[in-house]
Length: 295
Image 1 (cartoon, rainbow, N blue to C red):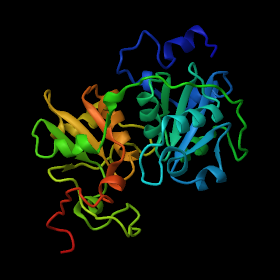
Image 2: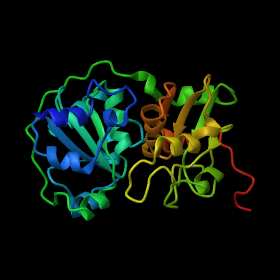
Image 3: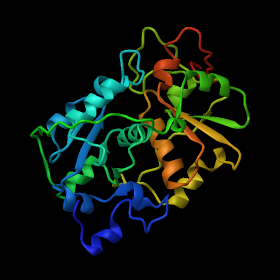
Image 4: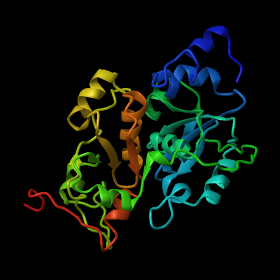
């Protein structure tokens, strides 16, 4: 992407910024509007259905559907060959800058980090704010030129699997951070919508602590200042603590990971991307229910 000297000072990933600077990982709607047509930039909306995208989306954006593009039928991450195909048809190459927005932008950011792709950003506002403030949008589905992207070893340390979560139960040096709603954590519902899950059990992983992410954005959908975010997560942070975040399918867990890792600078945070959709549907996993559930 071509930039002026002034743009370079604000450019995401600029070498003048520290590793955890917000401009390394977030872009403003003004910046994205100015660079929307830059070669090498791809905008991706991440959601759990195509409904919002089909209605309207950021001009030129492609859609990643969590359930059909990122997860298999058991809610596990799809294999590398499927991810390579997704990147190719999205027009993303090894040198691309990818900006995520929508319902679960941090899930896209986390996935690209897992795959070792460093030029990744999140739009620092909600999709509704984008349109309300007059930025370009439309309903035409783009047809990007397909690329070739051969995945390499990425950042496996950002991911926790079922075995890692099971091993963390009861260990004081590892915090299992459940960022779902109180109703999900307590065991009153399996899915956040309240929809039934015939093969699932509601509740939480034993010894997990509960901390929603409802308050981490302001009225525009932008991340709150670092001091407020640090206060929000303070009860669960410590210099010798590892954190594993989980939710229902990984979107909220990835958001907590993004804040803790990239905005607050904590290095030992992993996402259990199988989350409750995997854990709660397996017959052999331990499940705890809060005393208030079903009271």
